[in-house]
Amino acid sequence: MAKLSEILRERGYVHQHSSETLEEITDGQKRTVYLGIDPSADSLHVGNLVGLLALRHFIEDGHKVIILTGGGTGMIGDPGGKSEERNLLDEETVARNASAVAAQIRQVFGGKDFIEENNAKWLSTLNLLEFLRDVGKHFTVNAMIKKDIVRDRLEKESPISFTEFSYSLLQGFDYLHLNSEYGCDVQVGGSDQWSNILAGVEFVRRKEEKSVYALTWPLVVNKSTGKKFGKSEEGAIWLDAKKTSPFRMYQFFLNVDDEAVGELLLKLTLLPKATVDDVVMDHAKNPGARFAQRKLAQEVTRIVHGDDALAAALTETDLRFKKDLTRADKDQIRTDIEVGMTIADVLVAQGYAESKSAARRLVEGKAVKINGTLVDDVDRVLGKDDVDSDGMIVLTAGKSQPASVLALK
Image 1 (cartoon, rainbow, N blue to C red):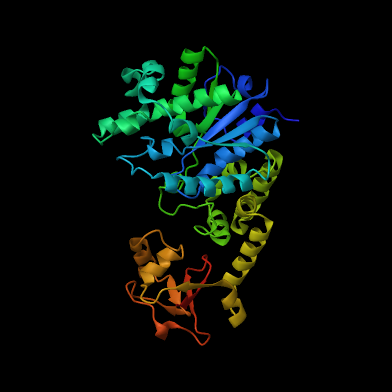
Image 2 (image 1 turned 60 degrees about the vertical axis):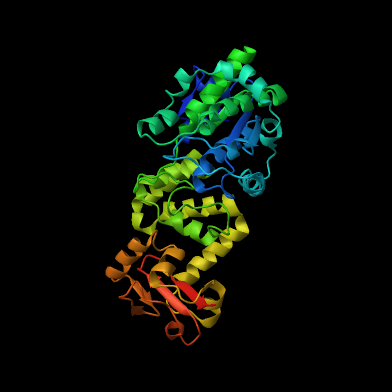
Protein backbone atom coordinates (compact mmCIF):
# COMPACT_ATOMS: atom_id res chain seq x y z
CA MET A 1 0.00 0.00 0.00
CA ALA A 2 1.33 3.42 -0.98
CA LYS A 3 2.38 5.81 1.78
CA LEU A 4 0.37 8.98 2.26
CA SER A 5 3.34 11.11 1.22
CA GLU A 6 3.53 9.20 -2.08
CA ILE A 7 -0.20 9.64 -2.71
CA LEU A 8 -0.12 13.38 -2.01
CA ARG A 9 2.93 13.92 -4.23
CA GLU A 10 1.74 11.88 -7.19
CA ARG A 11 -1.64 13.63 -7.17
CA GLY A 12 -0.09 17.11 -7.05
CA TYR A 13 -1.35 18.02 -3.58
CA VAL A 14 1.99 19.26 -2.23
CA HIS A 15 3.17 22.86 -2.64
CA GLN A 16 5.09 23.74 0.54
CA HIS A 17 5.63 22.20 3.96
CA SER A 18 7.36 23.51 7.07
CA SER A 19 9.03 20.22 7.99
CA GLU A 20 12.35 19.15 6.47
CA THR A 21 10.57 16.27 4.74
CA LEU A 22 6.93 15.68 3.87
CA GLU A 23 7.22 12.20 5.38
CA GLU A 24 7.74 13.75 8.83
CA ILE A 25 4.20 15.10 8.65
CA THR A 26 2.42 12.29 6.82
CA ASP A 27 4.10 8.93 7.33
CA GLY A 28 5.07 8.73 11.01
CA GLN A 29 2.71 9.23 13.94
CA LYS A 30 -0.94 9.88 13.21
CA ARG A 31 -1.66 13.60 13.20
CA THR A 32 -4.64 15.85 13.83
CA VAL A 33 -4.96 18.12 10.81
CA TYR A 34 -7.07 21.23 10.44
CA LEU A 35 -8.35 23.24 7.52
CA GLY A 36 -9.94 26.64 7.95
CA ILE A 37 -13.00 27.40 5.84
CA ASP A 38 -14.00 30.97 4.99
CA PRO A 39 -17.79 31.31 5.50
CA SER A 40 -18.14 34.45 3.37
CA ALA A 41 -20.33 32.52 0.89
CA ASP A 42 -23.02 29.88 1.39
CA SER A 43 -21.26 27.42 -0.90
CA LEU A 44 -17.79 26.09 -1.62
CA HIS A 45 -16.56 25.97 -5.20
CA VAL A 46 -14.64 23.41 -7.25
CA GLY A 47 -11.33 24.99 -6.28
CA ASN A 48 -12.00 23.84 -2.71
CA LEU A 49 -12.18 20.22 -3.83
CA VAL A 50 -8.39 19.99 -3.99
CA GLY A 51 -8.04 20.55 -0.27
CA LEU A 52 -11.06 18.49 0.71
CA LEU A 53 -9.91 15.48 -1.30
CA ALA A 54 -6.38 15.82 0.08
CA LEU A 55 -7.91 15.71 3.56
CA ARG A 56 -9.99 12.69 2.63
CA HIS A 57 -6.71 10.89 1.93
CA PHE A 58 -5.49 11.93 5.40
CA ILE A 59 -8.66 10.49 6.96
CA GLU A 60 -8.35 7.24 5.01
CA ASP A 61 -4.76 6.94 6.26
CA GLY A 62 -5.91 7.10 9.88
CA HIS A 63 -5.31 10.76 10.69
CA LYS A 64 -7.92 12.96 12.36
CA VAL A 65 -9.29 15.98 10.52
CA ILE A 66 -10.80 19.18 11.89
CA ILE A 67 -12.81 21.48 9.63
CA LEU A 68 -12.70 24.88 11.26
CA THR A 69 -15.38 27.28 10.09
CA GLY A 70 -14.18 30.84 10.45
CA GLY A 71 -17.26 32.16 12.18
CA GLY A 72 -15.06 34.68 13.99
CA THR A 73 -12.39 35.39 11.39
CA GLY A 74 -15.07 35.43 8.69
CA MET A 75 -16.41 38.58 10.29
CA ILE A 76 -12.94 40.13 9.86
CA GLY A 77 -11.72 39.10 6.40
CA ASP A 78 -8.35 37.81 5.23
CA PRO A 79 -6.48 40.53 3.29
CA GLY A 80 -4.98 37.99 0.89
CA GLY A 81 -5.96 37.88 -2.78
CA LYS A 82 -8.03 41.09 -2.70
CA SER A 83 -7.25 44.62 -3.76
CA GLU A 84 -9.68 46.33 -1.40
CA GLU A 85 -11.33 46.13 2.00
CA ARG A 86 -13.88 43.35 2.41
CA ASN A 87 -17.41 43.88 3.57
CA LEU A 88 -17.75 42.58 7.11
CA LEU A 89 -20.32 39.83 7.64
CA ASP A 90 -22.93 39.75 10.36
CA GLU A 91 -23.17 36.81 12.75
CA GLU A 92 -26.42 35.45 11.29
CA THR A 93 -25.01 35.35 7.74
CA VAL A 94 -21.84 33.62 8.89
CA ALA A 95 -23.82 30.96 10.77
CA ARG A 96 -26.09 30.29 7.80
CA ASN A 97 -23.14 30.01 5.41
CA ALA A 98 -21.22 27.74 7.79
CA SER A 99 -24.12 25.30 8.04
CA ALA A 100 -24.50 25.07 4.26
CA VAL A 101 -20.78 24.54 3.72
CA ALA A 102 -20.55 21.80 6.38
CA ALA A 103 -23.18 19.75 4.52
CA GLN A 104 -21.16 19.97 1.31
CA ILE A 105 -17.99 18.82 3.09
CA ARG A 106 -19.78 15.79 4.54
CA GLN A 107 -20.80 14.80 1.00
CA VAL A 108 -17.26 15.16 -0.40
CA PHE A 109 -15.82 13.16 2.53
CA GLY A 110 -18.18 10.33 1.65
CA GLY A 111 -19.58 10.05 5.17
CA LYS A 112 -16.17 9.67 6.82
CA ASP A 113 -15.90 11.15 10.30
CA PHE A 114 -14.34 14.52 10.97
CA ILE A 115 -14.48 17.14 13.70
CA GLU A 116 -16.48 20.31 13.10
CA GLU A 117 -15.49 23.48 14.92
CA ASN A 118 -16.28 27.18 14.64
CA ASN A 119 -13.75 29.72 15.89
CA ALA A 120 -16.53 32.12 16.89
CA LYS A 121 -16.83 29.97 20.02
CA TRP A 122 -13.51 31.20 21.42
CA LEU A 123 -12.72 34.37 19.44
CA SER A 124 -16.01 36.02 20.45
CA THR A 125 -15.09 35.76 24.13
CA LEU A 126 -11.52 37.09 23.93
CA ASN A 127 -10.53 39.88 26.27
CA LEU A 128 -8.80 42.59 24.25
CA LEU A 129 -6.08 43.44 26.77
CA GLU A 130 -5.28 39.80 27.43
CA PHE A 131 -5.18 39.08 23.70
CA LEU A 132 -2.74 41.93 23.02
CA ARG A 133 -0.57 40.84 25.94
CA ASP A 134 -0.59 37.08 25.34
CA VAL A 135 -0.81 36.93 21.55
CA GLY A 136 0.10 40.29 20.05
CA LYS A 137 3.54 40.42 21.65
CA HIS A 138 4.59 37.33 19.68
CA PHE A 139 3.98 39.05 16.31
CA THR A 140 6.14 41.90 15.01
CA VAL A 141 4.84 44.53 12.61
CA ASN A 142 8.18 44.23 10.78
CA ALA A 143 7.39 40.61 9.86
CA MET A 144 3.70 41.17 9.19
CA ILE A 145 4.21 43.89 6.55
CA LYS A 146 6.65 41.64 4.69
CA LYS A 147 3.97 39.02 4.04
CA ASP A 148 2.97 38.81 0.39
CA ILE A 149 -0.73 39.25 1.17
CA VAL A 150 -0.05 42.49 3.05
CA ARG A 151 2.84 43.81 0.97
CA ASP A 152 0.85 43.52 -2.25
CA ARG A 153 -1.92 45.68 -0.83
CA LEU A 154 0.53 48.28 0.46
CA GLU A 155 2.48 48.45 -2.81
CA LYS A 156 -0.76 49.05 -4.72
CA GLU A 157 -1.74 51.67 -2.15
CA SER A 158 -4.97 49.75 -1.57
CA PRO A 159 -6.61 50.38 1.80
CA ILE A 160 -5.98 47.75 4.45
CA SER A 161 -7.58 48.29 7.84
CA PHE A 162 -6.18 47.24 11.19
CA THR A 163 -9.05 44.73 11.23
CA GLU A 164 -7.68 42.83 8.24
CA PHE A 165 -4.07 43.43 9.28
CA SER A 166 -4.74 41.58 12.54
CA TYR A 167 -6.20 38.52 10.77
CA SER A 168 -3.03 36.44 11.07
CA LEU A 169 -2.99 36.95 14.85
CA LEU A 170 -6.47 35.46 15.10
CA GLN A 171 -5.55 32.57 12.82
CA GLY A 172 -2.47 31.91 14.93
CA PHE A 173 -4.64 31.89 18.04
CA ASP A 174 -6.93 29.34 16.35
CA TYR A 175 -3.96 27.03 15.86
CA LEU A 176 -2.96 27.43 19.52
CA HIS A 177 -6.51 26.69 20.69
CA LEU A 178 -6.90 23.58 18.51
CA ASN A 179 -3.48 22.35 19.58
CA SER A 180 -4.48 22.69 23.22
CA GLU A 181 -8.00 21.26 22.76
CA TYR A 182 -7.38 18.44 20.26
CA GLY A 183 -3.60 18.04 20.00
CA CYS A 184 -3.83 19.46 16.47
CA ASP A 185 -0.34 19.63 14.99
CA VAL A 186 -0.85 20.26 11.26
CA GLN A 187 -2.59 23.14 9.54
CA VAL A 188 -3.26 22.83 5.82
CA GLY A 189 -4.51 25.21 3.15
CA GLY A 190 -4.06 26.63 -0.33
CA SER A 191 -0.70 28.05 -1.34
CA ASP A 192 -2.05 31.60 -0.94
CA GLN A 193 -2.42 30.91 2.80
CA TRP A 194 1.20 29.91 3.38
CA SER A 195 2.31 33.02 5.26
CA ASN A 196 -0.75 33.00 7.54
CA ILE A 197 -0.33 29.31 8.35
CA LEU A 198 3.39 29.67 8.93
CA ALA A 199 2.76 32.55 11.32
CA GLY A 200 0.60 30.19 13.38
CA VAL A 201 3.34 27.56 13.41
CA GLU A 202 5.81 30.13 14.73
CA PHE A 203 3.31 31.43 17.30
CA VAL A 204 2.67 27.97 18.78
CA ARG A 205 6.42 27.32 18.87
CA ARG A 206 7.13 30.56 20.74
CA LYS A 207 4.14 30.34 23.05
CA GLU A 208 4.19 26.63 23.94
CA GLU A 209 7.64 25.50 22.75
CA LYS A 210 5.94 22.81 20.63
CA SER A 211 6.64 21.67 17.09
CA VAL A 212 3.61 21.94 14.81
CA TYR A 213 3.50 21.97 11.03
CA ALA A 214 2.22 23.71 7.93
CA LEU A 215 1.33 22.09 4.60
CA THR A 216 -0.14 23.77 1.52
CA TRP A 217 -1.34 22.60 -1.88
CA PRO A 218 -1.24 24.42 -5.24
CA LEU A 219 -4.30 26.37 -6.30
CA VAL A 220 -6.23 24.99 -9.28
CA VAL A 221 -5.85 27.33 -12.23
CA ASN A 222 -7.83 27.42 -15.46
CA LYS A 223 -4.98 27.13 -17.95
CA SER A 224 -6.94 28.78 -20.75
CA THR A 225 -7.71 31.94 -18.74
CA GLY A 226 -4.99 31.98 -16.10
CA LYS A 227 -7.64 32.47 -13.39
CA LYS A 228 -8.04 30.25 -10.37
CA PHE A 229 -11.23 28.30 -9.85
CA GLY A 230 -12.77 30.34 -7.06
CA LYS A 231 -15.90 31.93 -5.78
CA SER A 232 -14.74 35.45 -6.62
CA GLU A 233 -14.10 34.67 -10.29
CA GLU A 234 -16.61 34.99 -13.13
CA GLY A 235 -18.16 31.71 -14.08
CA ALA A 236 -17.47 30.04 -10.71
CA ILE A 237 -18.59 26.42 -10.43
CA TRP A 238 -20.27 26.05 -7.04
CA LEU A 239 -20.81 22.85 -5.06
CA ASP A 240 -24.35 23.97 -4.22
CA ALA A 241 -26.72 22.39 -6.75
CA LYS A 242 -28.94 25.49 -6.61
CA LYS A 243 -26.07 27.70 -7.73
CA THR A 244 -24.51 25.28 -10.22
CA SER A 245 -26.71 22.36 -11.21
CA PRO A 246 -25.16 18.87 -11.52
CA PHE A 247 -25.78 19.17 -15.27
CA ARG A 248 -23.84 22.47 -15.48
CA MET A 249 -21.03 21.02 -13.39
CA TYR A 250 -20.88 18.00 -15.69
CA GLN A 251 -20.79 20.24 -18.77
CA PHE A 252 -18.05 22.43 -17.28
CA PHE A 253 -15.68 19.52 -16.81
CA LEU A 254 -16.71 17.95 -20.11
CA ASN A 255 -15.29 21.06 -21.79
CA VAL A 256 -11.92 21.44 -20.03
CA ASP A 257 -8.84 21.61 -22.24
CA ASP A 258 -6.86 18.49 -23.10
CA GLU A 259 -3.74 19.91 -21.46
CA ALA A 260 -5.54 20.28 -18.11
CA VAL A 261 -7.58 17.09 -17.96
CA GLY A 262 -4.83 14.82 -16.63
CA GLU A 263 -3.99 17.17 -13.77
CA LEU A 264 -7.66 17.60 -12.87
CA LEU A 265 -8.27 13.85 -12.88
CA LEU A 266 -5.58 13.52 -10.24
CA LYS A 267 -6.55 16.51 -8.11
CA LEU A 268 -10.34 16.46 -8.32
CA THR A 269 -11.20 12.75 -8.33
CA LEU A 270 -10.49 9.66 -6.25
CA LEU A 271 -9.43 7.50 -9.19
CA PRO A 272 -6.14 5.64 -8.52
CA LYS A 273 -3.08 7.09 -10.24
CA ALA A 274 -2.74 4.00 -12.44
CA THR A 275 -6.34 4.39 -13.60
CA VAL A 276 -5.79 8.06 -14.41
CA ASP A 277 -2.72 7.14 -16.46
CA ASP A 278 -4.79 4.60 -18.43
CA VAL A 279 -7.57 7.13 -19.02
CA VAL A 280 -5.12 9.75 -20.30
CA MET A 281 -3.45 7.16 -22.57
CA ASP A 282 -6.79 6.05 -24.04
CA HIS A 283 -7.79 9.68 -24.51
CA ALA A 284 -4.63 10.40 -26.51
CA LYS A 285 -5.64 7.80 -29.09
CA ASN A 286 -8.76 9.78 -30.02
CA PRO A 287 -8.88 13.22 -28.32
CA GLY A 288 -12.00 14.19 -30.22
CA ALA A 289 -14.04 11.61 -28.31
CA ARG A 290 -13.19 13.48 -25.06
CA PHE A 291 -12.92 10.22 -23.14
CA ALA A 292 -10.82 11.77 -20.34
CA GLN A 293 -13.15 14.75 -20.00
CA ARG A 294 -16.17 12.46 -19.73
CA LYS A 295 -14.48 10.46 -17.00
CA LEU A 296 -13.51 13.65 -15.17
CA ALA A 297 -17.02 15.10 -15.42
CA GLN A 298 -18.59 11.87 -14.18
CA GLU A 299 -16.26 11.45 -11.20
CA VAL A 300 -16.43 15.06 -9.98
CA THR A 301 -20.22 15.18 -10.30
CA ARG A 302 -20.49 11.87 -8.41
CA ILE A 303 -18.24 13.07 -5.56
CA VAL A 304 -20.06 16.38 -5.15
CA HIS A 305 -23.67 15.36 -5.80
CA GLY A 306 -23.91 11.56 -5.64
CA ASP A 307 -24.85 8.77 -8.07
CA ASP A 308 -28.48 9.80 -8.53
CA ALA A 309 -27.56 13.37 -9.49
CA LEU A 310 -24.91 12.08 -11.89
CA ALA A 311 -27.48 9.81 -13.57
CA ALA A 312 -29.86 12.78 -13.93
CA ALA A 313 -27.06 14.94 -15.38
CA LEU A 314 -26.24 12.27 -17.97
CA THR A 315 -29.91 11.97 -18.92
CA GLU A 316 -30.22 15.73 -19.24
CA THR A 317 -27.06 15.84 -21.36
CA ASP A 318 -28.49 13.27 -23.77
CA LEU A 319 -31.75 15.23 -24.07
CA ARG A 320 -30.10 18.61 -24.60
CA PHE A 321 -28.05 17.27 -27.52
CA LYS A 322 -31.01 15.43 -29.04
CA LYS A 323 -31.95 16.74 -32.51
CA ASP A 324 -35.71 16.41 -32.29
CA LEU A 325 -37.10 17.11 -28.84
CA THR A 326 -40.58 15.91 -28.00
CA ARG A 327 -42.94 17.86 -25.75
CA ALA A 328 -42.14 15.39 -22.95
CA ASP A 329 -38.39 15.94 -23.48
CA LYS A 330 -38.82 19.71 -23.26
CA ASP A 331 -40.88 19.48 -20.10
CA GLN A 332 -38.15 17.38 -18.48
CA ILE A 333 -35.32 19.90 -19.05
CA ARG A 334 -37.09 23.24 -19.28
CA THR A 335 -36.12 26.32 -17.29
CA ASP A 336 -38.57 29.08 -16.41
CA ILE A 337 -37.41 32.61 -17.25
CA GLU A 338 -38.86 36.03 -16.55
CA VAL A 339 -40.70 37.89 -19.30
CA GLY A 340 -38.62 40.83 -20.50
CA MET A 341 -35.20 39.16 -20.52
CA THR A 342 -32.97 39.96 -23.48
CA ILE A 343 -31.03 37.43 -25.52
CA ALA A 344 -27.90 38.61 -23.72
CA ASP A 345 -29.52 38.11 -20.31
CA VAL A 346 -30.55 34.56 -21.18
CA LEU A 347 -27.17 33.60 -22.65
CA VAL A 348 -25.45 34.67 -19.43
CA ALA A 349 -28.10 33.08 -17.17
CA GLN A 350 -27.90 29.76 -19.04
CA GLY A 351 -24.12 29.64 -18.85
CA TYR A 352 -23.32 30.16 -22.52
CA ALA A 353 -21.50 33.44 -21.83
CA GLU A 354 -19.76 34.91 -18.78
CA SER A 355 -20.83 38.46 -19.60
CA LYS A 356 -23.08 40.46 -21.91
CA SER A 357 -20.09 41.39 -24.05
CA ALA A 358 -19.31 37.68 -24.46
CA ALA A 359 -22.97 37.10 -25.35
CA ARG A 360 -22.71 39.81 -28.01
CA ARG A 361 -19.72 38.04 -29.55
CA LEU A 362 -21.71 34.80 -29.73
CA VAL A 363 -24.55 36.52 -31.57
CA GLU A 364 -22.19 38.38 -33.91
CA GLY A 365 -20.48 35.07 -34.64
CA LYS A 366 -23.82 33.68 -35.82
CA ALA A 367 -23.80 30.95 -33.16
CA VAL A 368 -27.13 31.67 -31.45
CA LYS A 369 -30.45 30.28 -32.64
CA ILE A 370 -33.99 30.31 -31.26
CA ASN A 371 -36.16 27.40 -32.42
CA GLY A 372 -33.64 26.86 -35.21
CA THR A 373 -33.73 30.48 -36.46
CA LEU A 374 -30.55 32.57 -36.34
CA VAL A 375 -30.54 35.48 -33.87
CA ASP A 376 -28.98 38.77 -35.04
CA ASP A 377 -29.90 41.15 -32.20
CA VAL A 378 -28.37 40.48 -28.78
CA ASP A 379 -30.58 43.13 -27.16
CA ARG A 380 -33.80 41.61 -28.44
CA VAL A 381 -36.34 40.90 -25.70
CA LEU A 382 -37.78 37.38 -25.63
CA GLY A 383 -41.55 37.29 -25.74
CA LYS A 384 -44.59 35.24 -26.64
CA ASP A 385 -43.78 35.48 -30.36
CA ASP A 386 -40.68 33.36 -29.72
CA VAL A 387 -42.44 30.30 -28.27
CA ASP A 388 -42.90 27.21 -30.43
CA SER A 389 -45.99 25.07 -30.85
CA ASP A 390 -45.30 23.47 -27.45
CA GLY A 391 -45.25 26.89 -25.79
CA MET A 392 -41.50 26.86 -25.22
CA ILE A 393 -38.29 28.39 -26.59
CA VAL A 394 -35.39 26.17 -27.69
CA LEU A 395 -32.13 28.13 -27.46
CA THR A 396 -28.85 26.92 -28.92
CA ALA A 397 -25.43 28.61 -28.96
CA GLY A 398 -23.17 26.51 -31.16
CA LYS A 399 -23.05 22.86 -32.14
CA SER A 400 -20.80 21.84 -29.24
CA GLN A 401 -23.06 23.39 -26.58
CA PRO A 402 -26.23 21.75 -25.24
CA ALA A 403 -29.61 23.29 -26.01
CA SER A 404 -31.68 25.09 -23.39
CA VAL A 405 -35.46 24.83 -23.25
CA LEU A 406 -37.03 27.98 -21.84
CA ALA A 407 -40.55 28.70 -20.67
CA LEU A 408 -41.80 32.23 -20.05
CA LYS A 409 -43.24 32.81 -16.58
